Image (cartoon, rainbow, N blue to C red):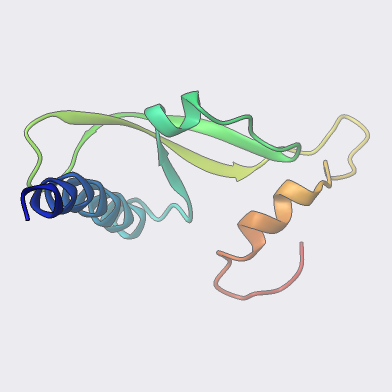
Length: 100
């Protein structure tokens, strides 16, 4: 029973933090947010850019959390979009569900 409780406590905080980040998506108007810890462990796919939002306070948390907004990368100098598989990830979060 003790190991189950430890797992619930561990996962509970992770799930709670994810829910608070999702709340900030609504509050900031950003479609996708990621913590700096997650960004540090990822290699962003081509076509995806990160923009720092700084350290933000999550409801119910004692410490601020460094967050990034993930967006489509800006247009290349040629004027054509930097199209890559990674941009499809952001399209899934689009309100209008139209292709990029």
